[in-house]
Amino acid sequence: MNWRMFSLSFMATSVLTVTAFSQSFVSQYKGLPYQDTRYSGGPQKIPGKVLCAYYDLGGEGVAYHDTDPKNHGSGELNPADGTYLNEFRIHEGVDSSYTKFNRKPDPIDDSPFDKVVPPADLPYVGWTEPGEWFNVTVDVTHAGTYAADFLYTSNRGGTISVDVNGKDATGPLQITTTNDPADPIAWRQWHHWNPASQLFKVRLSKGKNVLTVHIVANGNMNLAYFDFKKVRK
Image (cartoon, rainbow, N blue to C red; front, side, top):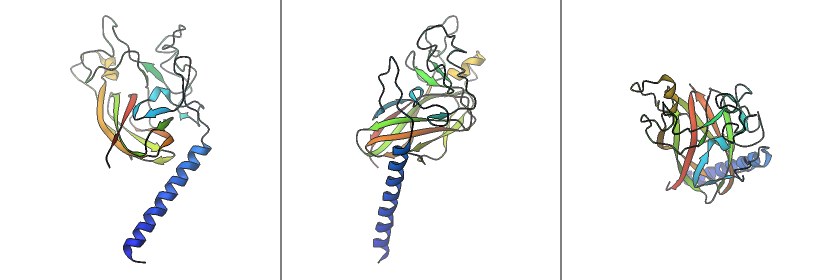
């Protein structure tokens, strides 16, 4: 066997091995796509926006890992008053909140210090700490390479990574700080929304895939969504 034939054979074997691992991971995974009274559920679609706050159902150790069981957004920062957004996923460990507009006297997520103004009432994952992770089940229309834009805030910068079907797909991804010394309100450093264009590219197979978002370093980030668009290799 010449070198070219060996290389092609090795590549084919590697692809088969990765595919087999992916299929095994997905078939054994116990989490379920998120759904509630407002969101009809099912895997989130790619291409399209994948909302972090719609991480899978299944609980601690299955759909996510959080450093403590309390949701520090829903029911704590946002009072438990019977409203949908204030009580969003209130009994789960992943900390969640939502973008708040028209708050006076100090605007919050629609302040002039945003790099981009996010949608109002957008749920997001916050209070992130290193070692935490969450899973999101997605449905990919066509196999291929996808670039992901990322909407986030980061008070001091950080690092995340993304797995696809149980395998690291991105390596460490550096998240640029959105801290702005010009903002006179200290707590609003957690609310400077920024779009990271093509934060990473990843190869996805058609159909059901499970993405795992890891908080690798620093934390103090708010994660809104990844916007996946198909690109050439």
